[in-house]
Image 1: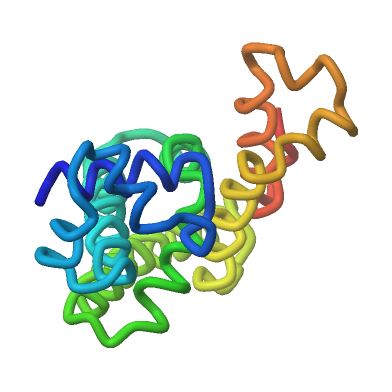
Image 2 (image 1 turned 30 degrees about the vertical axis):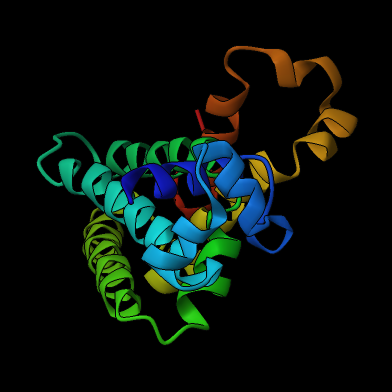
Length: 193
């Protein structure tokens, strides 16, 4: 069962969920497609399991940041880097969440939503603290959460657009860091460094 989820995640690195077939995942896993039907019923259930696993990993990475010391800006920068890492590894995560979790009746739906709410609560606290200290704008953390996730995903899912606009700069080792600083500056009172 774990090998099937791993195969689905591997396929999702290259294509959005709607473009992936049951046979493709079976081929990656080296199993008969009937085994996927046996464990998951249909492809959507397998994708929901993959989405749950990715969300747990994201949640774990964000949870480790709670104890992090530093300014609010530094801690927000760390959160942005976590999102960039997750979307680098899972460029179609948003589409997966919408198609396989939000629009499904799978019991894992509530688990994923609970994990995402926990991350939002942490960000709300960070934004409050940052606004009180004058480090961040007083913004609606829900919008900020969505913006950070969307900008992180776009950085990887639309990489050809970045290449068309920035050219060879996209190959620079610090390009993702520069992008993270830009995202941080959008929520900050202080200009980017």
